[in-house]
Image (cartoon, rainbow, N blue to C red):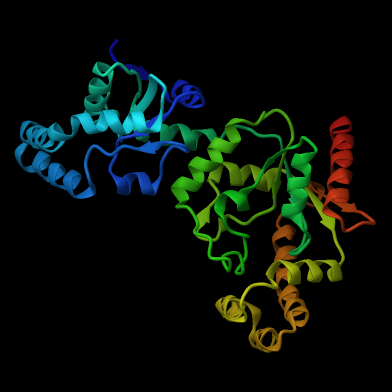
Length: 346
């Protein structure tokens, strides 16, 4: 049976059941790939560069013959590598544009007894499908609140209550402030962040409420896609009110294990925005191990910044939730009740 070309939507539906093999070179895969795909490069980065030059300078036939010289001795190895990843006889393959790399390897694997699905248009078509997907209208409710309010914990508590969520900071591997990278977890590329985000969105019902944390466009070095960010700015904000002391306590707990050197570097990174006096107070307090004083100084800045960002929204789009408890679990329950009342009385 010859390989079957599949449009991106069908390809991704089948990817939920069958393994995906990305035959692009390692650097292409590292920049961004379909979540869960295995890299099965037909060429190394250097070999792909060489073949590209041959194609431009001497034409398709010359480039094709050089490709055969490289790949020919490795044909059996490709089959072994695929079998090492899966017992399935149904597999999915793609390259950059659905051209010679994926067609050649799919032909080989078809002859080896695999039932092969080819991504029509390749990864390039997939990326276009992803970016278009961020324009899909979503029933967003934005979870707002000042720094240290426990929004991420509340978001996860909402999920435990069977609410739909999009955890942007979790997908970005960053906590969304100057201190968001102090735990040294590597962030994905923006391209991979977009792919992972789209993958998370695909399993949600766009017609039902989706909770998402209030974020700026940039989360560390990755960016929220324009289509989604625009919807976030237009959605209702459920602003939670948590006491200043509770926020300080939470932040001291969250960052208490981080070295003073890393915390000091994070403060220095925003010193121009903090101002000289707040920077001095924060750095001296961190050096003395007085994280509460440092946190108060930083919150003076972050609270003003948050209020300024919120002031750009229409007042009618902001709904306050005053709750007696600072518990993320209790706040999540109150948010679900509040959202239900809003849906009944739009």
